Amino acid sequence: MHIDWSALAQVALTSLLFGVGLVVLFAVGITAWSRRAIAVEAKKGSAPADTAVAGLCFAACLAAIAYGLYLIIPQFH
Image (cartoon, rainbow, N blue to C red; front, side):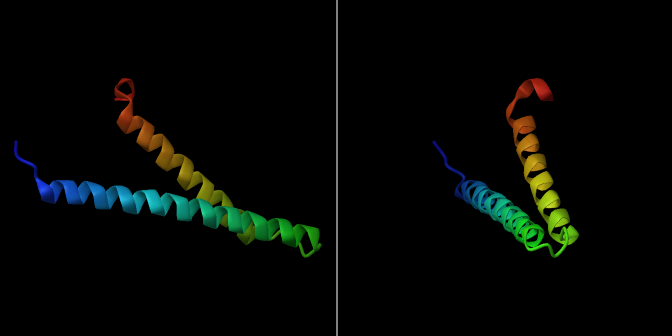
């Protein structure tokens, strides 16, 4: 049995980067949503930039999840 260590390292590194990246992206979305809520409570406006950042982060997370499901489930191909 032969193990291609280079390919295994590439898969492990890619999984780590995308796993951590998705968590960081979600955390940025939560932070932006929280800043928006604080601005609304302080009556400083609706903070459209924070709303846009949160929406983009959450949309990117949903897209990554949908793409992962597409890759895993063979009926979607």
